Amino acid sequence: MPTCGKPSFSVLAIAICGMTAAGCGGGAEGPTLHPVSGTVTYNGAPVANVQVSFVNEAAPRYASGTTDEEGKFQLMSFKENDGAIAGEHVVLVSKQEVVAPSAGGEPPSMDDMYKNYEQATAGGSGEAGGIPAIYATVDTSPLKQQVSADGPNEVTIQLED
Image 1: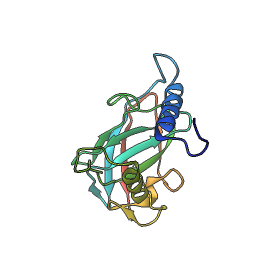
Image 2: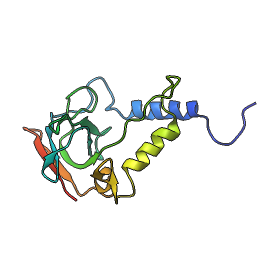
Image 3: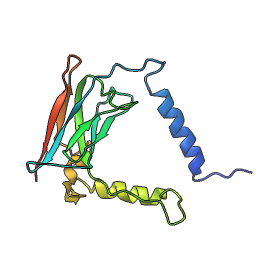
């Protein structure tokens, strides 16, 4: 007999998947997206392996990309390099350590992944993976970027101490 209390992980996963599917633009076409690419620098130097996210409240999900060795990235929302919706976005930048599988080859635990997230979003102060944590959350990031439907959307994101 089921008990009341904390929902199981599988119940939460099903609920999240259902909400995600319901909010993905409804229908086969989805929202109109525009290619976005750019470069991230920190104190004037390109930054490799950072997560760049563009967040817009009207979007069914945020657009994100990871910088290469030259600090260059391309955003995706649903598939590789499809871009972001037009409009103003809050830009998030964070460098997270990769959470490796356990010795037995199991995926990282939810606790390990959450600790990694907490490190990357350290309250908007300090550093996370060498990047000031102020850039890691919607509440603290001062970065804004306009995505144009007319393009081109080539941006330079300059991070500073």
